[in-house]
Length: 565
Image 1: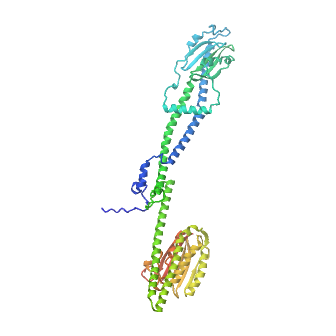
Image 2: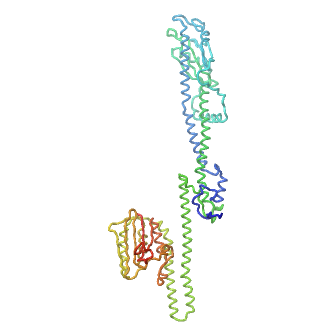
Image 3: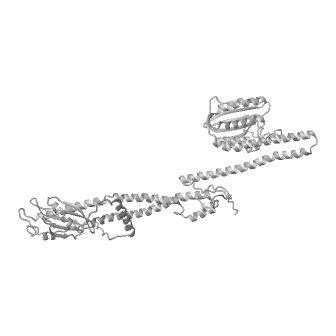
């Protein structure tokens, strides 16, 4: 089978880069993609910024949760309330065994047997029970052995991991900076902390305190043993040293574990996000840089190929479409300039060749009439060159002037009425009837009034140049919804059918032989450029006696200009 694939080398790729990038992107761009890979932290500052900023936000969130967490305070409150209830219950047990009015001596065993009472109690694991007399002497002690109801608290030495221990070390270091001004709690034995509450409990109120031992923090609660309204002893309960710290540490480690997981997820999502943002931007930048030398001072002659990312429904897709449109417009302008330069060179060669021939012939001409004829040719060609150069200069400046000049509102009907009055006199001097059919109401357009006036002057003067004595020219305008039509009609010879599409090309002119060289062929091309710059259209057609017979001789020519309102 014959390969009908069009050659796209040197053209702007406008369709399938995003679908099949390996088939249409330059080799250098594909090489850059392969070197970069899917994720590239080293070559993409944007990727690094996305990851860093996401991690900063995550770290601030986790640090705030850990620093502002009230779990320790709520845990202490709950444990203290539980110990108070148990201490008051145990003191009630002792009070139930005391006889009203009987003397009580806990140290001597009078009134109650402390050891026997303690043996009948069933304490949960992690609780120490102390019984003190009114002098603060220890009468009895008991350690709980029954497993408590609920989840078991793991030992601080259990379930350690390198990552969690490292994060805990960092957290302790950070919090130590903010807590450096706080007063340190001295370490005391659990029994001494419980004994210190005896004096306060003898007043009849339960006492609660937090102490710190070698293994960590603990709670101590003291409840009085009352007989006839007088305290005869104290029951003190204390939690195991380090139990609260172990629970808080376990909760903090669970937060840090989630932080590690969230960090990994955040990095992964950041890389995915960066791959959908940074990589396409890198491709667009690389496509614009492809062809540069290492010194960035010169470019290769190959045309720039912008990847097609317009399928993306985001700003990158819009950017890709805008860049592709800019590149396409740029190359169209370059091609147009190249073609214009070629046309100019071709048009200038003709009068120059005629001048050269006339000058060479003038040297050998012997008769005066021949010399006069050659001088007329030279004068005609010089005028033709002068007119051609002037028109070329105006045409070359037109693009920049259309961009630089500010469009302003103006009255189209008023402008056409003024032109009709001025150009109507020229037509009358030539014996041509000039008919102006303009609406009474004004039609306001926004554009360059002087440039559009140049278009209508060119159309009317062209009609005058083709008409003879007895012909007529009609200029009329009508408003059609969101557009306005301006029509210039004449009863001249009309336009050859094969020239209807050519007359708007640069340097094309179809005129009688006796009028050769008096026009550069740029007037209609300039008019079309001005009209299209205003978002309008212009076309030419012949006026025929009936639309049914397109082979009949035309009754004249008609030029139509449509402009948006």
